[in-house]
Length: 66
Image (cartoon, rainbow, N blue to C red; front, side):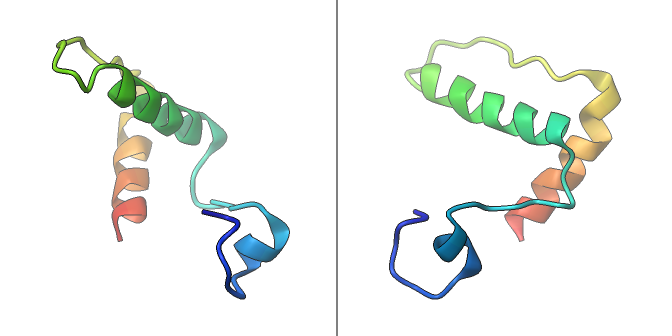
């Protein structure tokens, strides 16, 4: 994704920054992606979200969805 041709700063520097999202929330998002891949076969299991980051996680989801 970061190696695609183009003149985006992310491609040139090889990194993507999300200054609007805290490190703890970004880590939880990455954990969710990993969890989602592991359990995509249909085995149901819960993904735990700490109540303290719920609001910030919802705001990050909204930001990433737009």
